[in-house]
Length: 272
Ligand code: NAD
Figure 1: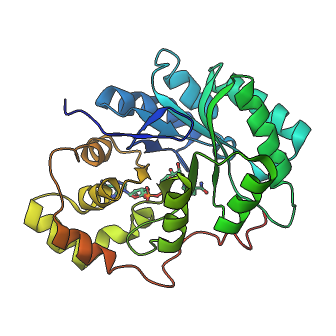
Figure 2: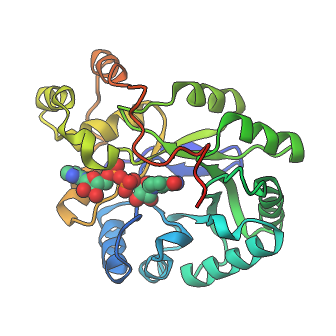
């Protein structure tokens, strides 16, 4: 099997660059899908308490402690006591004493609890219960507040990012601060797979559209967590380490970025 790339987190640990996302993976199917994926070679899984499938992930990974596991704190659980409680519940469901990466799922600026939540996560990390802590859907200004209030920089910001929504200024901010960019909905929830631009590049390399897009994420040094529940697609999405996009391919995909390319909620206004 081809050696998979890892990226280094500021917490001093390495994270596999490609992982499996399990949002909308039905809880009753999660164990068998995650089991299939890790047997096929996936080295990381991305879940969240709100996905309702942490138990299935935990069951599938019960004898695979080496698989890099990410979960996320849900919005309703922000705040000191509730973060501690939510974390305890996640570790029970996931059957892990230590979580590799724990993220604040959304900032929810209206609640104004994300800095307190961040302090609580730092405490959990300092107690050795989390290897790396990060955020998701945070703006540069919100991350600046976390750093100013605690002196601790998130290891990662997991954000919506795909060829039609590339978030260049946030990417630049991450680079300046040593924060890794993790792309959610990396395939544009499947929509970007129909792009004629991607189809042309895929034909040139005799690869699929999904493989071209995942390759684009890898070569941009993002962490990428495509989701599928179909075994053949899980295999396909991992067969991306034996070819390279050239500079021209990368430049063509860079031009797919659109002002209104966002598919998911806007973190500035998301309040759920
Ligand atoms: P995605 O971009 O990974 O697209 C998934 C969809 O693409 C699948 O449902 C499937 O229909 C299709 N697909 C996947 N592989 C394919 C292939 N090889 N051929 C054809 N079709 C294929 O979308 P996503 O699930 O939204 O994002 C991936 C992961 O990101 C999630 O599972 C979750 O872990 C994470 N995520 C995080 C947040 C957040 O707020 N932090 C939000 C959304 C998603």
